[in-house]
Image 1 (cartoon, one colour):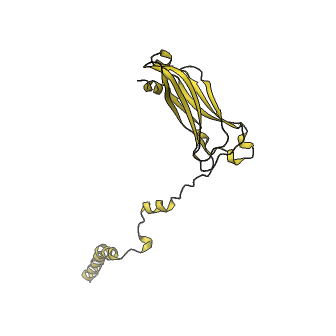
Image 2 (cartoon, rainbow, N blue to C red):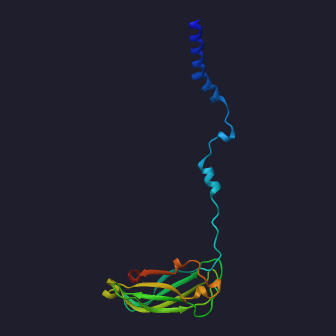
Image 3 (cartoon, one colour):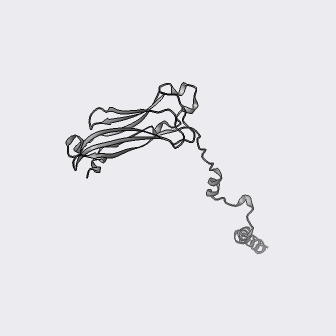
Length: 190
């Protein structure tokens, strides 16, 4: 009798340890048990970024060009700041509420305002420019060795956001200035 009990327990353990896991492995997974890909979850979570429909005057660039040469390394140069409405809506404002300033800053010195341009309305994609011309000598220490830098800034009337006109509220104030070194003017003369 002891042998029969021992044999029954032994066969039960073998069945439990070896055969039961094999039977369970053969069972097809139910949909709730299936593993989900983390990529699928992320794809469902991504929502389209809404595009702001607002005016956004922005300083796009500062251009340098030679107007005329007086020698190989000197002549008259033109510095042009370009502001463009990169927003999806027209910028519509009153007169004298906004301007574009162009500053010249000598290396280690105080910047000075060299040109300014008032503007009023800008449709999407429309540009306004501010221009300054001056003599340049790429072989001199003041321009050649230590050239000034140029900065373009959009300046708004201090209370423009309080005037009750949402069409002149710039929706991105972080792109309203740009600076460029005059060393690139020297490169034009070489």
